[in-house]
View 1 (cartoon, rainbow, N blue to C red):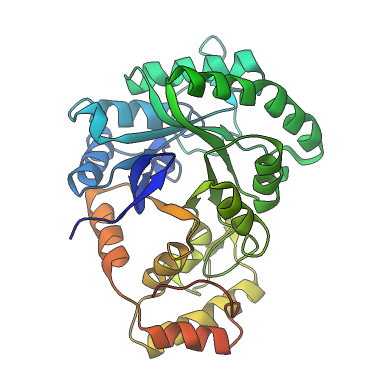
View 2: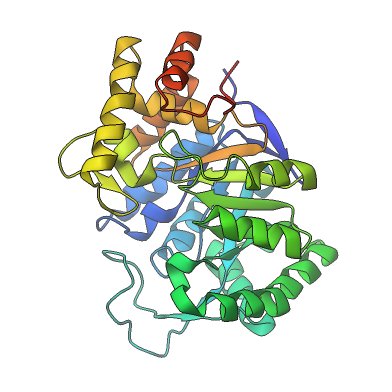
Amino acid sequence: MPLPRRSIAGLQATALGFGGAPLGDLFDHLDEGTAQATVVAALAAGISLIDTSPLYGHGLSEHRIGAALRNVPRDSVILSTKVGRWMDPTKPKTDGSGYRGGLPHPAVIDYSYDGAMRSFEQSLLRLGTDRIDILLIHDVDVWTHGELIEQRFGEAMAGAYRALDSLRASGTVKAIGIGVNESEMCERFARAGDFDVMMLAGRYTLLEQGALDSFLPLALEKKIAIMLAGVFNSGILATGAKAGGNYNYRAASPEILARVARIEAVCEAHGVKLPQVALAFAGAHPAVASVVLGAVTPEQVRENLDLFAQPVPQLLWSDLKSEGLLPAHAPVPA
């Protein structure tokens, strides 16, 4: 059955997208052939939305995706990448990139107009294309910048936003937005500029719904399409409440493990898998255009598609709400 499609500024994106962060050697060094085969498998399965970023492996994810895309018609793919960092090949890469591997080019954080244009041009070269469909300002959030957030927000609106707006006006980019880990920053940007789309990672999931009452209604009001990433909260909603499970890129606390165990028990009572329910919940909000999942093998792509296609019993949602594990007003699949 073909994947449903939803509009992002007129682009018909599949409700399940492919996320390129793991292809930057995020968790481990990947075999080149397998990495490209994973992208090919996603495209062959009908996934149209491919998301990446210069940050992911300091350009390696874009290189790998670009190589895979050379085998398909460009118009068959909705390509999303980001600005906010450009790579400096003249300097040695230092520790602290957060990636196990990747290319040997250090990232320069730069939200200026010229910095955004430089990042965009480098992405075009790595991806081997002449245009980007969706371009996002990346990581303007407290998680990334801490006490520098006010400075970074000002730089992004005065610089990168103007650059993206001009690229959209020229037709080189179809849709512009931001990609962050915090719904509060999504809301702030939504009120400050004219954005088409926003990628929110980890803040609207089966485990936490901080975006439900403020940002997502604003997105609907302003017709901002949402791409949801991190819907497994860095792994805990995929693996379940197991010792060593990750939540927000760290070992899950006892409180998080306990809450996930309660959610998992409801899923088991209805004979469905926890990640299946997590995916179904994430895609049910009317503001969400696409749920973006990463993969590092063709088998993982197929597993994600199988999970996404499986229906969830209506009584399960009622049980989660009656046990206080979901807000009563949270949208769920019909």
